[in-house]
Each structure stands twice: as C-alpha cells, then as structure tokens.
Amino acid sequence: MIILDTNFLIYLAKYRLIHLLDDVRSQLAVPDAVIEELEMLSIKAGKIKDREAAKLALSIIEKWNIKLLECGGNADSAILLLAEKNRAKVATMDKILSESLRKRGIFVIKLRQKKRLIMCQ
Image (cartoon, rainbow, N blue to C red):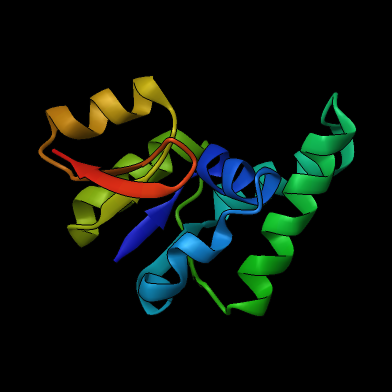
C-alpha cells in the first residue's frame, strides 16, 4: 500500500505528473483527512492554480477509485498512524512528515526533478 499525502497529490496535479503513478495505481490509498484538505483547498487556496490542482487531485482519486482510509484527525497524524498500522509506504513532499516517517522506519516516496519517483528510508 502507498498512502498519498495532500501536497504530493497537489504537486502531481499542478505539474500534470499523475501518470507517474500509473504502474502503482492498485496500491494507492488516501486518508479521509487528505480528502478533507483537498476539498478545503479546492475552495479556499490562495492561488487559482492551487485550487485547480486540488480539484484535479480529487477527480483523480475518484476516477482511479483510490482506496479511502478512515482515520480522523489531521492529515499528517492520520498518515503516520495508517502507515505504521498498514506497513505502508508514504508519498509526500513534506520534509517534516518525511523525517517523522523515516524515523519510524517507514519508506517515503518523493518526486525528483519533476520526472521520477524515488523511495527513501
């Protein structure tokens, strides 16, 4: 299982890089807190491009039928809890979350140079 973070989805949507996840589609999951963040950003993000990216990320989640994980709480704490519970990898661009995950031995997937995914532990 690969849990997707809000900023990772926004980044992929903003730069039209969602195709990088094609090979792992069946493994993708999103916490309900990430959906809530995306919905809020699709309405209230400061930049139009960010609002559009949030809307695109939500439509991709629906179109690809990405698994929804219920957890509650804020997105980062939900991701940490769910990743530990499910022994999942996490796709994120957030440095603080990334560091917390790696300290717990959870693999982190990041995007490099807007063209390839890399996994770190």
